[in-house]
Length: 109
Image (tube, rainbow, N blue to C red; front, side, top):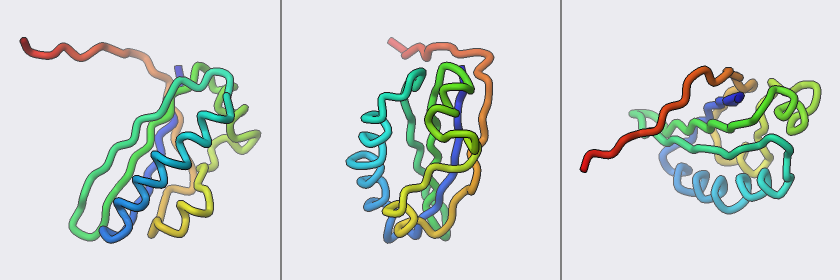
């Protein structure tokens, strides 16, 4: 399993609009691509003093599945134009990790 991790940053004033864009357009657009091996996405949000950081973590079955999503330059970040208008800066490239251990979270009774 491959985890594709990317960071983007917005001014505080754009954070809610960016999160809405992610959930209403970008993520459904990715899911509509029906990429073989794509297993989902998680979005993390953290407010900082000067901006708001977003982290996306996409899960794929194999690195080849990531290439099916992004092509030969699979390390290049996927940042649609609408997102670029809301972000102040972002990682130009995504990092790819092999998932070596995955454990489920136990909830206290």
